[in-house]
Length: 83
Image (cartoon, rainbow, N blue to C red; front, side, top):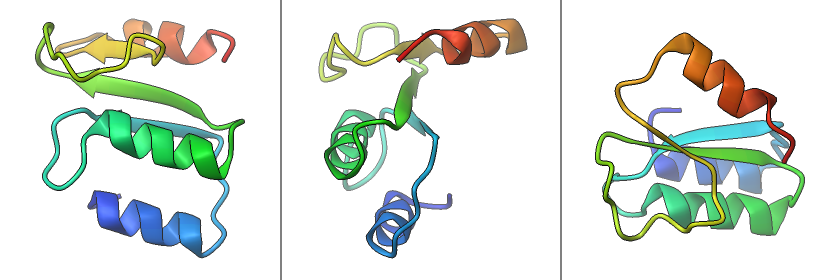
């Protein structure tokens, strides 16, 4: 997706993703807020918040998070965890 707005529009149009990987710090809405919106629409979507900052205060502790930089193996491990 190119923007949070585009992602929300697609969800409003009926898109049902299996997974959402989003940066945490974005203009307009944080990755945590986007993840909560997506989960409100469809609770079975796996979410992963990615951030370049290890100490971002607004990332909810119940959401999976991966800190940049990361290796492919780190991403694969996060995505293979049960939701």
